[in-house]
Length: 431
Length: 186
Image 1 (cartoon, rainbow over the protein chains, first blue to last red):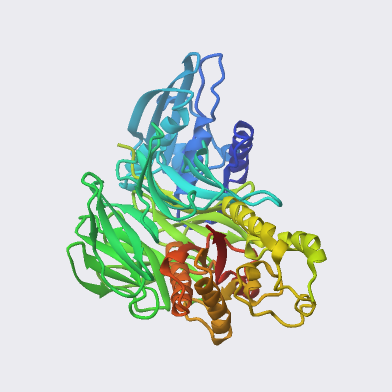
Image 2: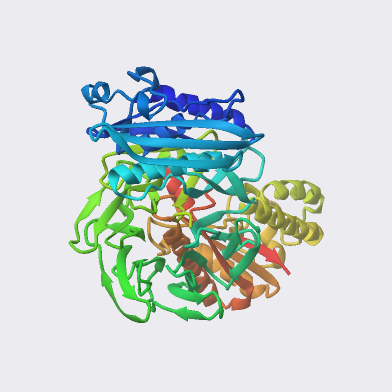
């Protein structure tokens, strides 16, 4: 395990953001057969120090995917400075398939130039190489982008390191009002930014398909209301504050509509709001609880939670209405589904009424796979490439975030330095 | 027997025991609720219904006079209805209590109550908002049976977002599955 590497990253992070509570990543279950890769420390040819350890960030990214086993920096058998210096025979003997080498230097104050090359040891050649420029604000993002390129070249799947996550934190201090915060951070927990603070609950954040806005539920006016907030302009729009519940917002794949839950008396149904015309259309009509809608990628169907059968189960239905088809039959409690990016499966909370875990259901075969071992796991969210699932869990009485690979083999935890963290949601790919 | 002299003592004890608002963990809501309750306490000067035997606390007092809401010994002092897991069924134990509040509201048309539905932390958050809403609506229906006006009652669900007990065990969950009655005067 890369304990040393992670703790170096950790220290840097704590120094930089001492004012903000930061998520710390702990790998809780590794994977046999992860691909070994050597990320050689990047060469800085200039005299000025670069504020980030580029190779460490790349190694940590690849490690967090569960698909790679980066070699400990101290255990590197060689540190080639360029392509010509790579001794292929040596790396083959060590059974290292891939090497990353690179350079980074300061070209002007807070301006950096980075070059990297991915070397395939068995081909004995470079398979990927790029040059980037960055500034202080974009440096980590550019490095995550390099990780994405490496990941895609080797696995064939698009990387999701250079994306963001949103989540809700709550701090309760004796004698003070609780502080609820809606935060956005990089996928490794860095650069946390608070986009909303409230003394009343904040719930159900969800990204717009273009990643520029968040929709969420806020109780700041003592009832549930749905807001859409633009992350750059900070412009905030209250899109629903009807009497009763205004909950569970989720964007249609084309970004034009928002599905949500509204209530009339004790009856909770799913509605779709056209964001342009502001016309609200009722989708489900049932006396039971209907809530937690999620869209199929084609935008034609919704999957949602309903208590119409007595207990909460998942159902699938056309947005044009019609009959709802029940999807889950195993377990007493199946709720809060999110459809995978490829539309082939859903991830959801699966429980018996006492214990709640994260599970996936294959929409073709109906195969249900339980992925986690927690007792109060909830709020699962797919990475945009479908490789990992981020969710909320309890650890020693505190709310933490956790991630599991879609096959259930690799697990990690993201722990906040203080308070609870909950309701993570993974942003789409950057455009 | 009248105990007017007790009024000052009463006010301070009532302020510290003004129902759920005082123990609730929430901020803005709790603060305003507390204020409105203490504003009512100010009207206690003519608390003619208070008698020595009632103050002993041996037996909850049944009275629907306007100020009964400020009497710690009133049946109306109990303002939390508890529920079973994933259920909005009101248990037999709470039917009388809800009826008392319904009759009080029917007798005092200027009084308003907010029914706040809550759930325990188990299960998903938005489903729990829907569940808390059903719990509050179940209480609302029974209050209306007593002749209270629909306009006197508002409903809000906080789901599992505002627990009163913070452990992760049966006792904490039992306390969190609830509908709270929060009185507001107009």
